[in-house]
Length: 491
Ligand code: NI
Image (cartoon, rainbow, N blue to C red):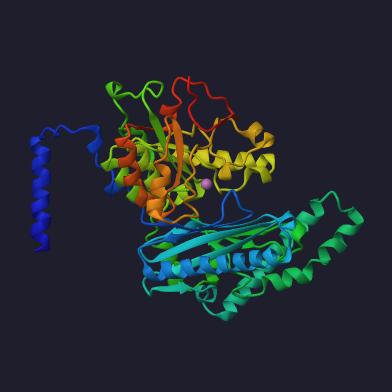
């Protein structure tokens, strides 16, 4: 039966090719890009708090086609949320409002490895409590054949191999730290030997063979491994986190043979996004050009995506022939590149909401630039161009941020508080209150928000509004780099 179908479709394909049938006349709208642009790993988020509160939690984790993986990663994230709630609850009772430090917990993940047999994710958790900042790293691996998480111990041939490997790691960490101490100009030469030997106990403890010490072993596509030791794990806090690299040949003798197979076989090469640049991007034809100076316009903008709900949102926008603007996070776009590409090809505008969604006001110049530029570099890779506009996370902005922002900053006119209100009707009601030439803020990270969009579109279209992208909204008006814009200026 299977063969029949195969043969039938081959014959069909061949005959199409030979006769080179003319392509059916299609409107640009019907370009089918959806099927080829699905991501097999999606971003799920758990959020608490936002710009108006001092306590914020934003944790992302992968949604895959494997239920056991999803369940474990979700519960890992919920544990972190519990930790956050405990910290903030305690502060609530202990401190007066004015004394409470701002607390920001954030978790994001990157894909380490993705094949039919193995999945690997690297999590970064960062905590900012007042002026204290710390980070933690966790690597999770899943054996998709056995449907089980792979524990660190399970990667090695036996416990002795793990121990011997740990001894090698210890000497690498020693060399690394010795190097740092000897290069440190703040330590006098005569004190260097002592400063280094004071570290030895910490290094020994921090590199012992245990699951905890080796919780962030990161496989790299060149076959080498990276081991990240959190701040305080092998050295005092002032050293920060320590990352070492282990050559493929150095680790191989210790690893289980079938684990080596799991990790080296069938590794999927990252999808090529190069063809994007050659593909047709749907834009409004000249006749359809909307002049927001003459007709009532409204710009629908979506922040913090792409997420697991973005593909559904793109379907909704397509069904309604509405173009929107996506202020994406670099870290999520890196996981859902195809979603971003699809949004772009379907005529939506893709703009910059930084890489990590940190409050830019709290960062130094180098960090601000990194947050913006890394996201631009990724956009260039995916859609072939950088962003034109920036939306600073939480709308948080000051002179320093302004100085480093070589783009106009687009804020919003209407905030439905959809991070707090998870009710579709309420969201639809709030967003439908738009006035001419305003910007609506929404988050495609919430299912309830995405579900509210058809109603928002219906109501606003009934009122005669035209949906435009940010670029269209401000057409004909000069926006300054570092300037802040909440709506289109009326004449
Ligand atoms: Ni945001």
